[in-house]
Amino acid sequence: MIICSCNVISDTAIRDIVTTTDVTFGSPAQVYDCLGCSVQCGLCSRSVKRILDERQGETAAAAVWPVQAEPAPCALMSFA
Ligand code: FES
Image (cartoon, rainbow, N blue to C red; front, side, top):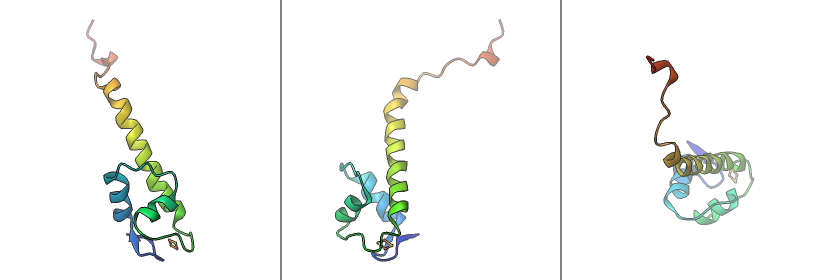
């Protein structure tokens, strides 16, 4: 789906650049810089920010995951 109609950028292109680079994007403008364009009308900034937030959430969850790798025993499965 096209996220930015001014630059004709899809959500897939944004997700690709956010997930395949080692750059930590702090703002939508940095994503545009990396894609070789710039923000024009700004209507897409909220959507780009949402994608960045999703990515940061995935990264944070991945960092926490090894701590939770061993699932806690379920109290309902106890037959004591
Ligand atoms: S829609 Fe992205 S800059 Fe206008």
